[in-house]
Image (spheres, rainbow, N blue to C red):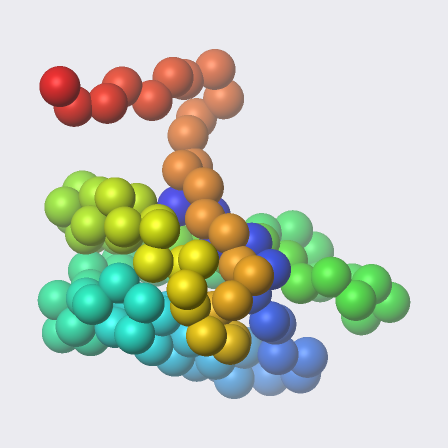
Length: 107
């Protein structure tokens, strides 16, 4: 899953940036989607692209879940983002699909 418009901490310390992104994910999953931190299933998360301090736009955040069920729990409740409070207001989520692949929905 790719998350857009997530505030990015501007620091040269990589571990601080990673910790900030993971804290944001944990809080978002708990607050907006009701997925508790111990069961959120985030396998890894990292920013896409090269950091450019001259640009004001944050890089997209790629999130990989350890289970399909965790991702589906988020994607099936995207409507919760409409009523979200800051810092979750205004972010958007999308499926991360390989180039040329079409998403098959369950019947």
